[in-house]
Amino acid sequence: MNRPRILVNIAMTVDGKIDSAARKGAAISSRADKRRVGELRASVDAILIGGRTLLNEDPRLTVKSAELRAERLRKGWPENPAKVGVVTDVGADLVVAPEGQGQALPLRRFLTSGPAQVYLFTTRCTAPEVLAAFETAGATVHVMGQERVDLVAVFRTLHEAGIRSVLVEGGGTLIAELFGLGLVDELTIYIAPKIFGGNSAPTLADGHGFLPNQAPGLKLESVEKFDHEGGILVHYFVEHEE
Image (cartoon, rainbow, N blue to C red; front, side, top):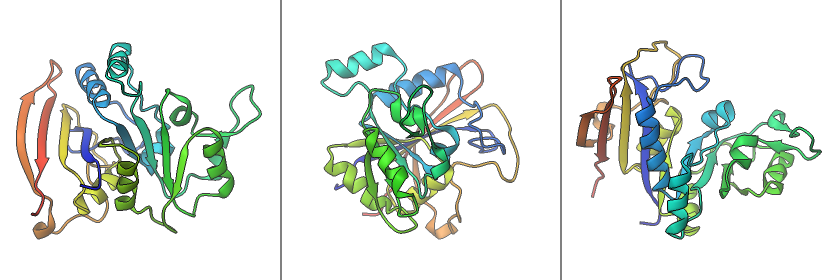
């Protein structure tokens, strides 16, 4: 393959929501699931998120466990996986100066938490001064497309950079596009015993949806009662046409 292996991991409520209608990164995972996600992050070459997740949450995307980071170093790997953001337009209003510093940085936690290699894939909608701020902060910036990022080209570029496994952590629009392009290899879902509801609350796969004869096929690998909170962990492999 001329792309990395792509694993989607998501936490959702019983009614299929991956966030509340407020879209502020509502807590869904249990402590046990957070530990599992930490181990999963530590096992891959890169972690990738879409634009809404990047802009709304400015996540760190690092491995929190010092023990897991040390194990990566013992293997000769970088301390943290690479961080990859895919966004149509970063928005000039997000370029803000860190306290006590004169130089502006966009999305401070995403850029500076680490150490980690940072990639930004965006379009010509993002202002040149924002691209320059990312590059000054040490990120590798790729402009791919006029108004939509070419996802196939994103993963080809990551593969050429030596990245062989990518963990996708959202959001729903990006995940739906990846499934539509046949790019997902595995899907792991933590189902929390919660109900968020709301027509505008995001789901695992948003966007325009799939017709029944175009719906991606999944092969169940495992399902288990995962924790004392009543969470369930489901693991699928994605069926690809030969």
